[in-house]
Image 1 (cartoon, rainbow, N blue to C red):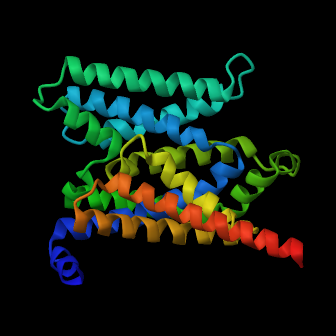
Image 2: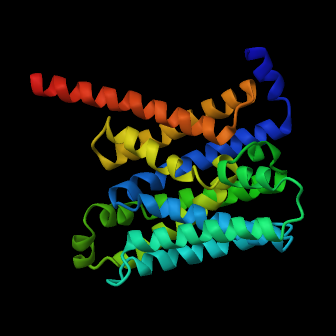
Length: 283
């Protein structure tokens, strides 16, 4: 098995897939902790459905680079979701449900009506679940992923203290003179960027798993924000690497394999956390 893996690593497309998987894992885990604590977890799910709808539009329009359309529209929808969520007439969860379902429906409708592909079901499955698209990345797509990932990580590091303040006590942060709305907007935009980048890895339906599972797993083990964030990044990278390696060796769907790995690790962390709680009470 080790020899087979080393043989596969000689191919550039496998190395591209691993590099992309690691970068996406790091970025999604960094924002995952904040989104879970702020109860924004479903925004990732909603934006992933929006990205699918825009991807379908780009395919119908024969865009050579889908990212040029998918990224700005998804970012715009992230801003709209954040604004709409504060509207008393349309609550945040209702807005996410409306936009996500409508985007899925429109995307699937367009792909059926206007597509020239002979395998519509395969195209839809690839977009929703990732399929093997991570193994067909070009050098240009990998470079774009690297650039966007570096931007996301740098923004998180530079604004770490402000993101921390907005995450734990938004009212106090606002009272302290911090522009909480601006940083909530920043979080939404970064989330949109991560989702667009991650679509090639796990597809639009499974992206939220990359955001939620590592964060929840690390929260079972640690209490401090910094420790949870670092642990979340480590868990996410390990699960993505193991998932993609298993996928390559055993020919399983990349996205589903990574998400299953995340779910297994969450189960292990949940048990460890429960045992720690029981031992703590006994002491």
